[in-house]
Image (cartoon, rainbow, N blue to C red; front, side, top):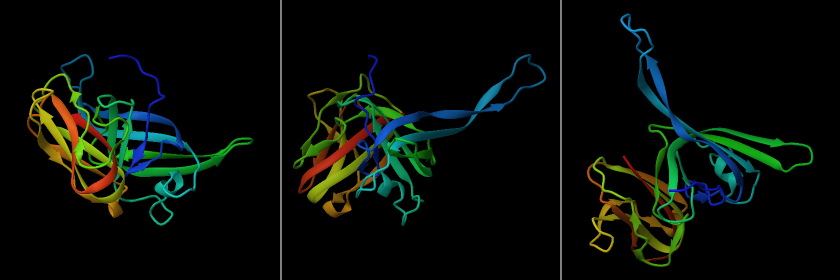
Length: 242
C-alpha cells in the first residue's frame, strides 16, 4: 500500500456520476458513540461502544443541467429526496483500489455565491441503518460492458469468513437488460461462482443503485460479471468485507 493523491476520486449517487460538479468531500468515515459505564471501583473512566454513525459532506459547483448536481439533490419534486440515497466514492482509478460507500438520507442542501466567484452548492449524506463501509473497488471507477462478460480479477490478499456488503451503481444501459454478479474463487485463474447477484436493470431503469448484504465465507479472488442481452452497461461496483 502507498500514499495516494486525490486526483482519482469519483462521486456516484443513485447511479448518477456527480464527479464533474463536486470539488471537495469530507467526513468519509464513521463514528462510534461512546457510553460512559464508569463504576465506583475504578479510578479512570470506562466506556462501551453505542450507536455507529456516518456522514459525508459534499461541496460542488452549482449545475442545473439534466442529471447533474442540482437535479439529483432536489429529485423529490424540487425538494430533497426522502428515499435512501446510495453513495459510492472510489478513491483510486483501478480495480482493487479503496473505496467507501454509504446507504444514507440526504440531510441538507445549500447554495451560495461569493463576490467574484461561481455559485456553489453543498449537501450532506447521513447514515441510515449502517455506517460507512470501506472496501475494494471491483471496477476501475466505472466500467462499461459492451455485452455480457467479466471484469478484472481483484486479489484481496486472503479469504474472509464474516460475509460483507456489495454496492452497485448502474449509470446507464444503452439497450436491453443487464444483471450484475459478484463472483469469487480460491485461485486467480480458477473456477468462479456467484456469491452476490444484483437486481436486473433494463435500459429504462438506469440510473439506479443497489446495496446487498451477505453472510459466510468470501474467497480471496473476486470479480464482476454481467449477464443478459444488452449493450453498453456502465457500472461501478464496490465490495466491503465484514
